Image 1 (spheres, rainbow over the protein chains, first blue to last red):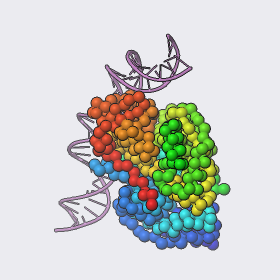
Image 2: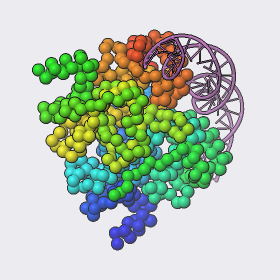
Image 3: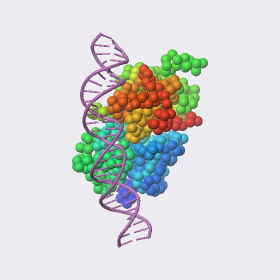
Length: 252
Length: 252
DNA sequence: CGATCTTTTGACTCTGATCAACCGGGGTGG
DNA sequence: CCACCCCGGTTGATCAGAGTCAAAAGATCG
């Protein structure tokens, strides 16, 4: 019955509880843990695009869970150059791992309108009584590991790949993650990023991103419609980008 | 007396116990913790340069502590391109944070001869009985945060800085870390990296690293002697690289 | 004292940046 | 209702930072 209700919610709101689904996919949750996570994600606030959820160097904000919408983590140099470290997609949890007294090492910025739940209690739970929430703790650890793996992929893109490879690789990563969150249909995935944002993530100029995307389309590897992308020829893309999805430890 | 012995060791071996000093600088250790850490670092093995301590994708190796020597973490693409993620300096601890069942997300490679202690017990201690080793646990958390901060700096270098800025920034980071480990004398710090290694870290070609280093020398910002570097004009370097050292949470 | 590794130099190429302008749609205000 | 504006995407022309190829010159080390 619960499952049915969730599905009904999913259909109705389009997001239901991606967070619960995602976390649960890392480690099977006990009923208590499931309820706990549900309660956390029940309280949520809506945030418009372009909101700074956290500013680098300033005291840390609450941890959160992204119920819907896209955000990114970034740092801005004094002269205005911006580097995006990665993206937060629906279902992602952020701000969990860091020390309470620390200052934020990165800014967090919403790229679309977002629905965000406060995850302070989740952090407290896995920090203070991990033995009571073992699967939750484990799932969060896996999530943190995954996040690191994505960051390392990002470094490789920036350091050793061409513009063509970088873009292919990033789109594959996003498609992969959206698929894990159950947000794709076939080879088509939502894609609300502007070319400027892609440029700031991949260390390229806006103009060059535009031209490279055109090249990818001309090569019949991807298609864009509205704010979604279609990765036709996904295998060829993977081979171009030498894309190897990070392995998630089995949910034993 | 203990302090005196340590200093004597430090003078004799040049490394004594950088690890204990470094970890202790993050959080003041209790006598028990201090002893614990000392015992761990007492058992150490010597490893020649060019040893692969861990290979990406393969099951995880033991965590370790670097008593002396330099190493790096990296990933190699199928076609031979290599991306270095960061460097391990004397006093650094590695492999702590990752899930036991996971596969290594990066390779670890010694760049010089190294002396390495097994840190399995440290990992076990802070994982299983953090309440018994609170300062140790806290110090390791801070260390992990620092490591992440350095990785983010690395991303910014790769994505948004010129070759000249990148090299200045990297040298500043290394000098800073070596200073924290007590391995500098004045503005001079050890620098055993080859230009090829610098190139693989900064996403540049060997030739371009060579030319950019020459430029930095011609501009009287740095000097190289033997395998050490001298950052004269450190303020100007910092301004060129927009270098801002990561803030370490106060050891309250 | 070879053998090998690292640094240096020169010539040339090319990927990607910069500057500048234009297009097209969606919203806004008069 | 339409002119206007703003934002995101597109295009063209030019430039420069960095890569590549090839070879020589120093270091280091058995």
